[in-house]
Structure formats: structure tokens, C-alpha cells
Image 1 (cartoon, rainbow, N blue to C red):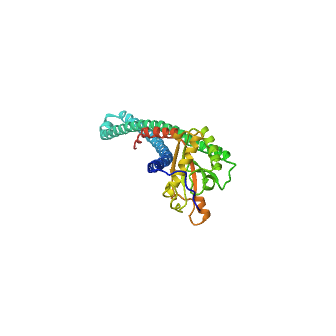
Image 2 (cartoon, rainbow, N blue to C red; image 1 turned 60 degrees about the vertical axis):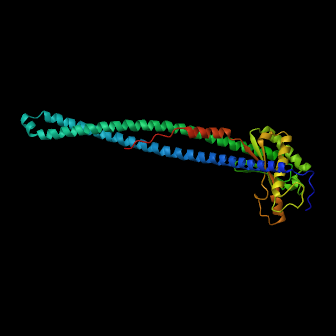
Length: 329
């Protein structure tokens, strides 16, 4: 296809600026994805810790029951020994003399049992205290887990609502030219080259401008949504001599920048918008047929709700003290 010459050449400084912005944008996107994966991993970690705490609490309850049973058994034996000792004291002096060795043995046994009883009482109190601390910590962690789960659910609902709003606003466009889908907790608006640009051009056609204006109207109402514009190409090199363009990196980056500019012109705050060029390196199909190449020549607008509340909850969980270790038998 013959590519029409661009209206103006891109200076070397502008190219360097675009390359720097592209690198910063890619790093920003990677950081946002790491944050999302980190949030999901932290939720799993909190769930695993909660399950472990429940197991520890159950073991402490069992230990307390066993200790209580041993305490009652020892108390009963102590009473029996006490009764035996009282009976021996009522015997005659001769019987006392004959049984003195037995008395000593019983007295020692009583002393030993009393020491065991005291130790069992101490362990029982300690087990109860540990159980109370564990129950309080478990309640706190359950509350934080509930808060985190709600924050994730609210985020998912916000993403679903955003997809519904965007789909409704762009309903009039052909599905082969424009698609709205959910992926990794984000809304992806994929626009074909046919809808936006003439071959080799970085200027958006009127029909594409109409779609971007409708999208910008939705984004003005959704102020807690960040916008990443990614330009993509197929693997066919641009025609030699195309004004202002060296390769597909240039083409994809300039197209993304042009779309970002149109969105901000239509009312989207510039600080929410990031433009990046991905060239031919993130295809959605193999570049082996004209149809697949057409699918790869696209622009993706990625909408991500801000996760400030979610990260605050995760930070609070990380700062919480660890549960005290359970006492052994």
C-alpha cells in the first residue's frame, strides 16, 4: 500500500522525547500490573494466614480441654490420698509405727501430686490466655480480610460498570472495528487501524475521532480511571522514505500520542493519560495472513481504576503485628 507523506517531519528531539515517554509508559504499565498481582497475592496470603490461625486456635482449645481433664483427674486422686492419710492418722500408735514408711511414701506422693496439680493449673491459665489472645487476633484479621475482600469486590464492580458504560457509548460502531473486553481487572478498548488511520498515517480519520469523543465523554464521568493508549502494528516494515518515520516503533508511538492528544482535547485530564508505542511486538495473531495482519494493526486503550484504597488496606495488614506463638503442652 502506498503511504501518503506526512504533513510535517518529526525532529530528532521530538523522537527522543517520544522514546523517553514510551519507556516511562511501559515502566508505569508494568508497575501497575505488579501492583495488581501483588494485591491478589496479598489477599491469598491473608487467607492462608487466617486458615493457619484457625487451626492453631482449634489445637489450643483441644489442649485446654485435655489440661482441664488432667486437672480434674489429679484433683480427684489428691482427695483420695488425703482421705487415706486421714484414715492412717486414726490408727493406733503401733500401727503408726509399723506403717511409718507407708506414711512417708504417701506424704511424698501427695507433695508430688500437689506440685503436678499446681503446674497443671498454671498451664491451664496460660493456655486460656493464649487462646484469648489468639481469638482477638483472629477477629482482627477476619475484619481486615473482610475489608480487603470488599475493596476487591468494589474494584471489580467498578471495572464491570466501566465496561458497561464504554460498551454502551460505543455501541454504534462495527464490532470488527471496535471491541470492548475485560482482561486482568482492566477494560480494553481495541480499535482497528481501519477505524482510526489511513495506511502509514498518524492522523485520526473523522469516524475514529467520533469514537474517541464518545469514549472521552464516559472518561470525564469516571475520574478515578487511568488511561493507557498503546499503538500496535503488524510486522511489515514501513515504506522507505515515509516522512518523519524510521520504523514501526515511530508509527505506533506517534499514533498512540495522537489518540492521547485527542482524548485530552475532548476533556480527559492529561495527567490520567499515558501514550506508548508497542510496534509489532505484542501481536494478537500470527502475521501470516492479510486478515491476521489487519488484526495486529490496532490501538488499545486500557482503562484501569485507581487502587489507592486497596493499597491502603494492604499496607495496614502488613503493619499488623504477628500472632503470638501458641504455648506447648
